[in-house]
Length: 300
Length: 321
Image (cartoon, rainbow over the protein chains, first blue to last red):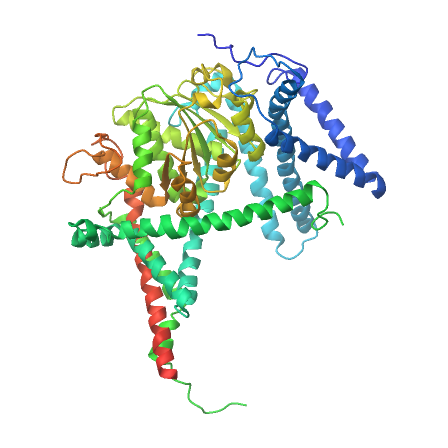
């Protein structure tokens, strides 16, 4: 089996994982990015605006062209373009993967920006001993502990001597793995689940207070919702289904069949209409952002 | 100024409309919790979407490859973890190799890794084969930009694998391109299915951009109506929705499809017999079977309080008129 058959050929834009070459390239890229960022911050508004408009337009233009320009179908690795149009089509198709990498890096920086913002707000609150500074302390300690144990676990797993850790159970685990497991699976994941489960209580309370048959429309909605909910209750559905089972006509009155009819003939068309409206709205908003016509939510 | 006026008596209608929140919360807590400690088996009739999902997976030949977008975390583990486990059980018993990636949450790859390891351990205990990382499955990790990544998956799948490493057993981390799972894969079309296990809008992100491979979704209960739109249009080969979907898959794994028996599950769409894995885990005790009674009682309470509230409103209106 040729295990290296699919490894991408070496170019200026890639380097082996964990190599010095890759680290140097990442550092140079980061330095250029930071320099551009601060340069843009320091630039006067009349210089900054055209740069931002142009960057936004060119970035959006790529994907507009990518979606609208015909793409090569069933392209083979040794296929060559026969004319300029095909050449452009091949170029667009090949570039998309690179652009996706770039957008992934930009999106990853957004996560970094979020972390920086959290640190700034909560460290400031802690230092100034402002109201509820204790919560900020908990957040910062939790964040730090997760980073330390997560990174410790990651570093250990890179060592070939610790490869047994990838197996089942706790084989080969050390303090770092147990620490990370306690923080991630023991605390974070359970708190995550507990937080989400609270929604059920709000839904019940809201349904009790608000779900009233005050008009014909509300009554139709109420009856429909009751049928769909009853159809999800296996016990009710089973006994109801057994009581109407037999004739073809009466089969139509099985709860699951009524719920399926409602879903296919009422709910789905209604949702399609809503989706269509949302789609048009998104397209309009996308155009406004792409052409820098949208001013709200920005620096202005 | 204080007065000696007696407090106005609440009518029955008003009382029915003003149950304290704490009583509602307590009732829900009790009704949802009790079935978790005292398991009850409820009858189940799998719906068409779940049957499609099961049938499509069971028809895959051994050694096939599927791509899984594991876009869930433990916030929705009540539904998503059960779905992932049911999917993995079918995959492991059919000896299907798979690639996992996520575009939804940085926590997702670790959650997926833990779930795969847990199901693999259970399969070994039941006499099955252990699923080894790198050899039987590969985890590509988290991609922060879902839109661009999904377009790249469709356009040039191997580009998203470039530079990614995974952890094989008893050897250092290796480039995923060297994994046996990815051998022979040139495009996303080389996978039999793209299966999205999600609790977010990553399903639509994938649906809009990945067109070269058939898709099946496993979504949370609240996402079922919007996702049914795509299933009804034939854009999805199968759909597993919420706890009901998990219970459907577990029922089908136990009873099979069109296999004669006391709890026979039939489908007009499929004429052939598609046997399940009777007696194998979860053997009637999966997450679907365990959580379905809780959902059942929660829905019962919801219906009850809505009826009580409306009854109260009608009584109050009658009294006022």
